[in-house]
Image 1 (cartoon, one colour):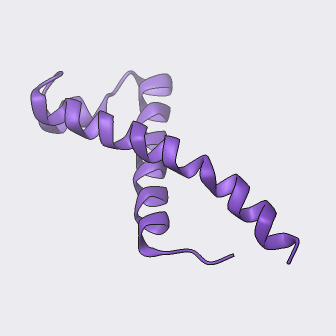
Image 2 (cartoon, rainbow, N blue to C red):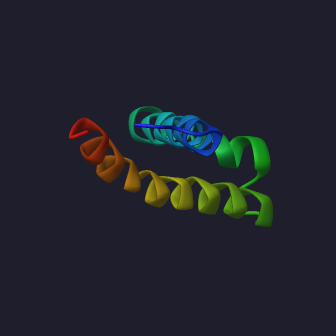
Length: 70
């Protein structure tokens, strides 16, 4: 399986998003809202990029499966 810079970048971003959700779940601390403001346009862009990155990484499952059969 060949990975590119986009895979690594989005995987890192989605991991950071998962840590943010963990902080929300355990401690009620929204790190994005704390740093960028509660639902400002910039924080909404951050949330959207993390969501799009997660959707893109769904394709990673197909690439892992096709790479293992070669």
